[in-house]
Image (tube, rainbow, N blue to C red; front, side, top):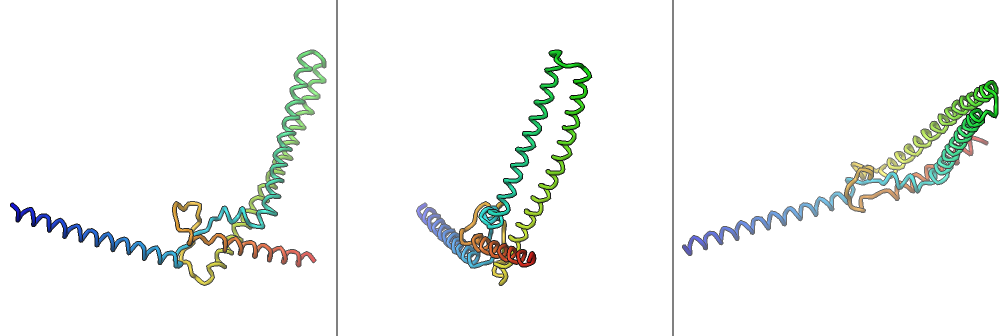
Length: 198
């Protein structure tokens, strides 16, 4: 009986030693893999951060947002004024303060104002949508060119957008380098545009 227990104990110890060795090997392998990754195969960019902190956004992007907000406020006020005018007309007519013919004339006038308002709003909205589309494309182009410039030496085999990233070492974040390059490219574009205007 003692021999069986001793044999089982020795087997268990041997098995545990193998497990510990496998675990240590796995841990060492993970450490080596992490070290290899940090050395440059992968990188990520916090694109939202780069855009928000870039000079193009701080100048053109903020101005475009303000312009859009101002237009939306203006549309809302015009719509409110037209609704108020229509309500006032209806109240006057119901109180008998105007004839049916006058009410119909004023109603037609309000309907024309509404049609003009809708046509103008649609034109303004299309123009703003186009400006936003162009700004978005320019920003994306600057970011992509900046990433290509930062990785011109091919140091990174893959660069991820951090938007979908769940977890990564900070050492893999190249956002600051990309931001600096975006600003550099943007300033160069502004200089070129200023030169072409002269």
